[in-house]
Length: 136
Image 1 (cartoon, helix red, strand yellow):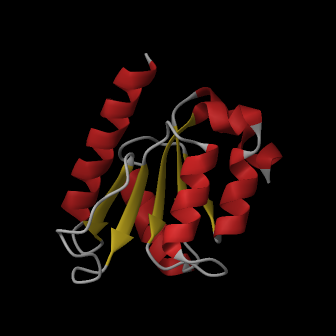
Image 2: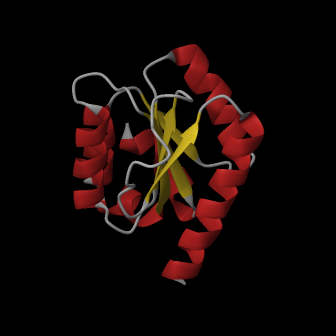
């Protein structure tokens, strides 16, 4: 799979982890407004394999995932991802009542409701720009 996306690795890359093809397609089109380089994988295991590639890891600027993923719990996946990529922000899309506002948020992880495309675009832009300032 990495061979297929190698040409994209010269710019900022967003990794989208979503097992639902229709939802992933909609989210990918929204994310491509922030950067055209969006790579989608369907499960957390594939995402963790992708970040093991040095070329991919260097281009990765943001990971977007749902709070429910198959094969591993959402918090376990985020923890494992942050262990491997501590400088890359993770955006977790949740149901509106799924994540209480008063619950502590780990550093580098942002939780938002998955209901608003405008909120998704705004949050992604903010995270990409904050991350590019940190790495510049």
